[in-house]
Image 1 (spheres, rainbow, N blue to C red):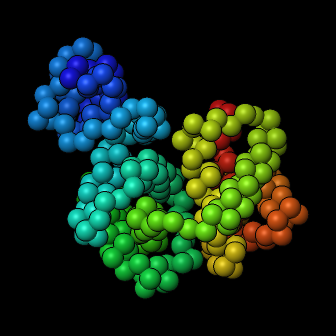
Image 2: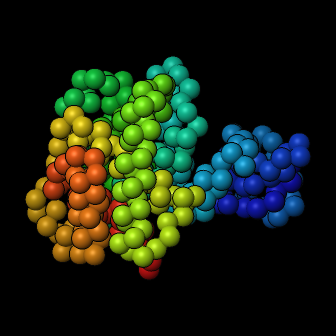
Length: 272
């Protein structure tokens, strides 16, 4: 297998059996250049590129140590839960971990209002989450709150779940589509559906709608909420428009604290 593109020290794009693939492995690109042959013993995982373009994008946009941490968490989860997780978790969890580390470094800590329920309902996944935040502490010297263990548990549980009501899924997808359109119109931008930031936003809106449906408040500290409003006024006004769309078009009331989280995601979509 020859290297087509080096993504980082631990990931390269190679040509294998007539297909472009992402090869992941510790030091797989060390001392290598384009067109060099990859040592197959260095490759830990292979992904078909055309099915994993967002993974390629992610590897180029987040620190590679964040992706490495995520892979370790996934490997540990699969062993502890004795199951194979959906490949989509590689993008979603790595992106979430990177975003969480970034927030922590900026002094922004998010509370998980479902912490108690997650600890009871998803005990094994939560234990994986606890292991994950300990790993982050050891490797990054960043102490994550226990709330983050619960967030990680939800991602892992979602990626092992199957099925669901198709009618509810279609309705929820329509709601998210309209909410994203509100953001696009408000900011006068075209949101790239292949962009990682779009995935991040849609994933959060999905959870926000679920919480609203079951009347589970996503509690944010009031002081933190006020800081976000003041720091990102344009994105906050946009989030208010999103909430109005949800209320007027679908009869769903998003609690004020939820707007703080949506504001953070919108801010990442705004042009620099």
